[in-house]
Structure formats: C-alpha cells, structure tokens
Length: 99
Image (cartoon, rainbow, N blue to C red; front, side):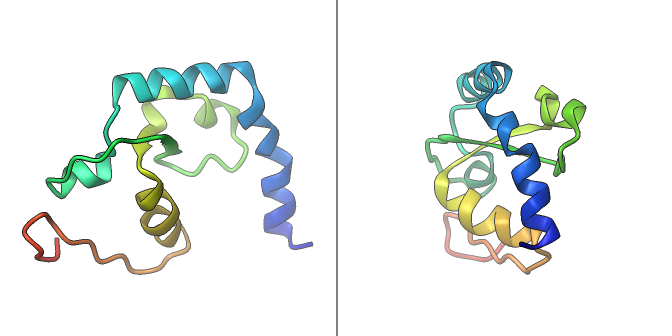
C-alpha cells in the first residue's frame, strides 16, 4: 500500500460524519450548479462537493465552508482530479473555444 493511499484512508472517515453531511447539503443548496461549468458559460447541476484546497486530513480545512465548491461529476472526476495530480487541463467554453 502506498503512503498516499494510507493517508487517504486515514481521513476518509471524515466524509461519513454528520457535520460533513450537513455541510455538503448546505453547500449544494447554496451553490446548486457546477462552478467550473458556470465559468465556461454552461449550466450543469452539481451533486459533488469538492474541497478547493486539498485538506490532507486537516480538520479545520476539511470542515471550512469557504473551502467548498459544488461540482458536477464530470468536472470532479476529470478536470479537478487531473489538476490535483499536476496535469494540464484544457477546458472549452460554450462557444467551443478553449478558455
């Protein structure tokens, strides 16, 4: 097991806490659309709450409402994950041009 996967498993339990579940619902109610899609002029319903800054188990950062963003499944699983791994992300606006 890699140190990264061990680290992730150690704080994965935070996602099962009552406080996280409340914060998640509040974030989706406050920002029901994917903020990455909105930047491109697209309207997409969000169902994932992402941490803007990686928390790496830091409870204060994990539970900070200002560190949360609503994303659609596509943006979370493709764009955000690639950015966190240091990859290049090319996104296209509603007009088809890269932004």
